[in-house]
Image (cartoon, rainbow, N blue to C red; front, side, top):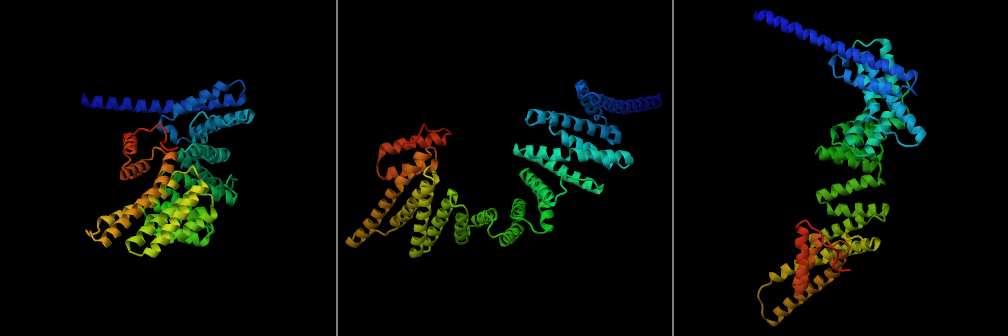
Length: 442
């Protein structure tokens, strides 16, 4: 009895599988017929294209259909037809097409490619697949560009990569490709790498960059891409090799120069930074952030030399920091970073001297008191010099916590208790996630 039941269950299962397979094949065939009806009279049979899409999507829920070249080509043809219809409407209306799917061109290409790669695909089916791939390749690229512009980087990468795969298939069959021009092909490799990197696929991005690099005559952006991909993959040594080679090959390229600056910043190579930043300023004389960054570098160099008791060099670097912060403030009077940095320069110098003052031994002699008071007066002057810069920074960005804290501490030193209270209230509000209504200093 048990054996009979098992046999009956197996029979029922095989029947249900066969019915499912037949159901999928029928749906795919029916979808093909609906597409034919649409193509015969597209103006009056618009609903047939909708029907074709619905039936082919339903058919592909059955696994056996995915190994049918006929069904795959039908699917490719349906999605390619939807794409053509929408692009034709776009040409008439002058508006960008609103695709019915996320990427109809990619859906069509994927179906054609699957059919092309089937081991038992017939010669005429393979030819149909190649023809379909040729028809949708340019649209795959265009939709990829749209995805990239919308910052949908993984979808952009999928589209761009499909365009390259399409090129390989077309060339293998002696057909024309949208990427036949070498410059266009290299650009496609580049934007595919960009999309991959933006999607976090740095290992894949690296493959595309390397392909261009190995072909010779790599442009600056390829060296920059190789450097950034390697850096993202934590291979700092290899990244720096590409950067060094790129800088040698393209010494006037701003992008590689900025990569070099970022490398020096990350490593704290202050002495090397000054030259690179000055070169960058020559190339981009209106870039305020470069002036502020160079001011910061000189500020750090000043502190380094002061700690080492090299007062002459420290003074030189301090003056250079003042110069570049001043240049930044003149270049963009609405930039809050420049006046804040200038204020911090004087403030930090005062703070360092305060430590020196506190470390002075008790000496109540006339000479000792004179030395103490001289240093104390110098500190007061420095805090007074810092104050107007912090006031300016606060007027431009009243919610910057560092500026508010600096103002509060200076007012505390000056015993201006009302202002201390005012800025404590503002600090508490910003720390609590709020925003102050407006600047205190106008």
